Length: 196
Image (tube, rainbow, N blue to C red; front, side, top):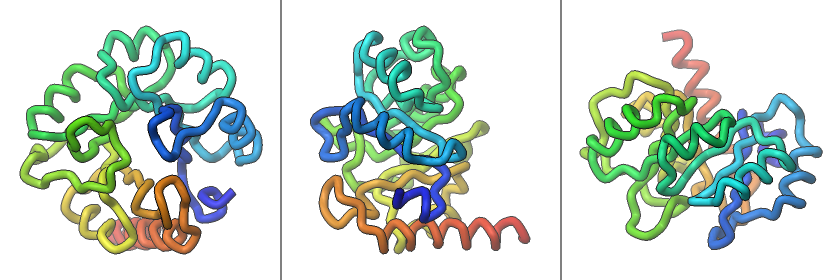
């Protein structure tokens, strides 16, 4: 498995049919069975029904569900599984409101706002739209790639980073060289950072 051998901490399985990265439950189960139990499995859903989310949890057994649509905090809590909430950032208030509303989320994932598209656009977050600080774990997404991830880490200081389109040769097709370059860059940054 490419992402595991490259040293990723987590793998995202997309359960959103319009996405070029979408997988079926059957394929997701095969991936789940093929990877190490040490790799965190994240199931990404976008405004899925409670029954659909529960089926994914039952059959795929993800460690985390990542809600990437307009789900409410009540909806996410009611599912009863550890979750991250994705926030498409238009303004600092979007982040502050989500942080207050989704206190039960293990983390927030902050992504760029692109009208009508829930994520995976390759666009970077507007820096002026970000709050000065966020006093909780959060993940930076949106337009990251090997060439810009160090600058993003230095500027934002997130708890983790999320990449998808930035390591692809075409939509939905991961490029092994880009995957390795991205992860190696983040690992090198972390090593230096720990000794500051």
